[in-house]
Length: 480
Image (cartoon, rainbow, N blue to C red; front, side, top):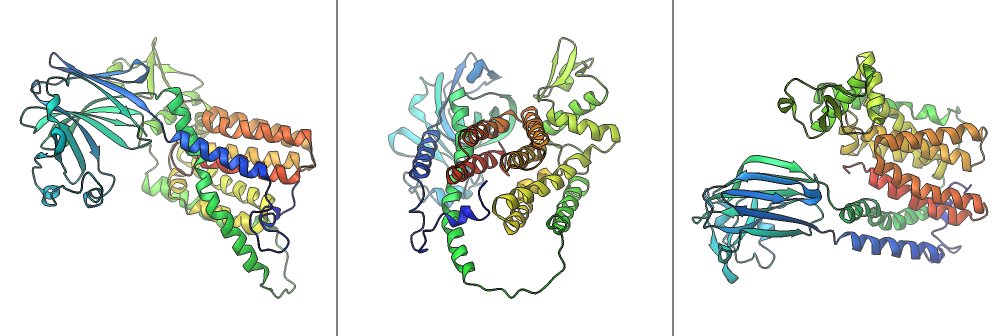
């Protein structure tokens, strides 16, 4: 096992003047590989085809999914691209080729199309940017769109001859969903119908790579900062005096209690103890079904009136699509009449585990800082009061990591800790599969390294850094 503080100590040579130069070549090679993977992940491509014929507009999505609407009044119109605003239009206009746009156009009550080079016309409402190709009026019955956006939304616009009325199909890469909207006077005005889709496997791998390897950006900034702080702290002498010894875990009780109270506040006052999105509704539905001792509920008499993308009706059975890990925990709350209390409890336990993980690796101070940083994450805080599975996922992953450390550290009762680590990783797999794989695969390699040789402490620590930081980034104190 690596001594506490060695992670910060190995960044500096004995003279304390050359940061990073004594790191292993494998460390640099590993980081170079991560950067190459990150560059590959930026090339994510999803192709979508749109067909306009016989008064119908149809979107052909990956996996054979389709979405179709009636789209009359645009037979002699044109096709364009719509980009919802991610920033103020003034910022967008600073970049070519948009720097020639009229300023007053952005605040017009009814935006009109302006002529631009190459047969293009542009409109810039406050909520987005649209460009149409008027010369494609006759050839726009079939359009293939290749999305190279790694997130956000982009749409394909079909408009009539006057350019004011039409339809736009907006694809959200983040939410994996395409929605038809009515287009009126330069903007989408009303959603018509939508369909979820799954990105191709290569695109999914690229998304997962960005979310896991992307953590290296932050690490490269934190490593030199940690080294500087260590040097500064080394010159400070603190007077010591006898004090009463308090167990370290008891010192964390106020912080853990604060996290629990904050989660209760979010669950009870902000979210009113009810689910608010389809995912949460589905989790609660599955938990209620499991609490009754069943895997599926009878189909409702009129299934079309209960249609929901994550709740399925098949062969007279009504069930959710999610794995049973989190619904099993939620079912306990359902049986006790307090399902809204499950995530706040898991949040408090996760804070305790975060502290324990940081303390075992880098010392008591880092453990406290880790827990405090978790409480400053808006995503973590809001999720602790919901019916979503993210907090349960975090709890099982942290329990696995702490148990794994107990095993490789040669602590007492290795069988118990090994069993607990296996159960935790298994429950993580039953909660969110990608997160469990992101943790299980690197830790399997790390375990193999530990078995082969217990002498490579430094190599073990460097590999552990990669195995811990990348999965925790994917688990993200933000959405996957």
